[in-house]
Amino acid sequence: MIHQRPGLRRHQGRLGRQSLSSPFGLYRPDMEHDACGVGMTCHIKGEKSHDIVADALKILLHLAHRGAAGCDEASGDGAGILIQMPDDFLREAELGFRLPDVGDYGAGLVFLPVDDAQRRWCMQQLEASIWEADQAFLGWRKVPVVSGALGDLAREAEPSVYQAFVRKNPKISDTAGLEEALFLIRKAAERRVLASDLPEKRYFHIPSLSCRTLVYKGMFLAHQVGAYYPDLASPAMTSALAVVHQRYSTNTFPAWHLAQPFRYLCHNGEINTLKSNLNWMAARQHQFRTDRFGGDVSRILPAIAPGGSDSAALDNAVELLCRTGRSLPHAMMMLIPEAWQHHETMDDDRRAF
Image (tube, rainbow, N blue to C red; front, side, top):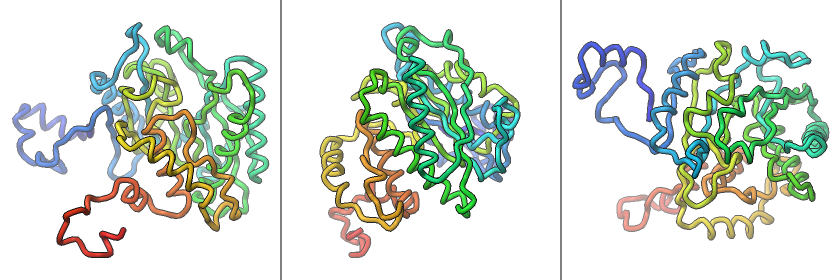
C-alpha cells in the first residue's frame, strides 16, 4: 500500500473517488496496486518531517485486516516501522552522553532479557563486541514503553527494550564503513549470546544497528505500535521515509524478534524451497571468500540466523550480499531470479546470470 500525497487526498476530496480513475500530479491509475501487509510513505525530495512517521502509522491501521491475532485477540503476530535515524529526536532525549555529528554514530533497538543479571550480561557482550571492533561504546537508553497496550500473550514474552549507541572510529571515512563495522558488531554479539547457556537468551535480539535507519517493532497488532512506543508520537521523531508491516505468521509462531520490518526488507513468506535454501547456505558458508572483514569469513557466520522465519532468512541473505559488495538491486536479482526457462529471446549472458 503506497500512501497518497496530501495533494492527491485534497484532489480526491474535491472530485470524489471517481477522480482516481484519471491521472493527477504524480498519480497514475495504471500503477495502482496493493501489497499484503506492507506500506510506505516518503518525501520525494528527502525532506524529513513527523508527518511521514504519523502517516505511516495510519497506513498500518488500514492494514490491520492483513495481520493476525492470537487466541486472546489482543496479541498480534507482529508489526513495526522502519524510519531514517531520527537525529533530532535522539538529541532531545535524555541520553546522559553527547551524540557525535550525524553519520559519525550508529544506534539500534535491542531486545534484552527481563532478568537483571542476564540483561546486564547481554549488554556486556554487545559492549565488548563494540570495543573489539575498534569502535567506541557511547551508552544505553532505556526505551519508554507502555506494556499495558499489549495483549496477555505478547506481554508474557515481552523483552526489555533498550537502544545502544556507537561512536565511529575516526579512521573510518564514510557511513558505508561504519555500516560494515556495525554489521560485524551485531554478528559478534549474536554469536556470543547464542553460544551461551543463558536461560533467557531467547529474549536477546538486535532489530537494527545502523547509522542510517532505526526500527521499532514487536509482537503487536497494528494499532499497538504507536501505543507501545511513545517515542513515535514525538514531533521531533522525523524521517523522509517510513516502511510499515503487519504480520500474518503461517509457518512460524508469533515472536517479538520475527516482527517486521527487518533490517533490509519486509516480506510475506511462503518460500516453498525454504529447507533446501537453508541447507545449501549452511553447506556453502564455509567456502565463502572475501577481502572484507580482514579476510576472516567466520566473523559473519552463521550466514542465516537460527530460529528465524523464511522472511528473516531472506533478509539475512540480502544483508550478506550487500555487505560483501553487491548493490541492493544486484542482490535482489540473485535471490529472486528472473524467469529464464523457455525464454527464447533472452541473451546468453542474462540467462547465465
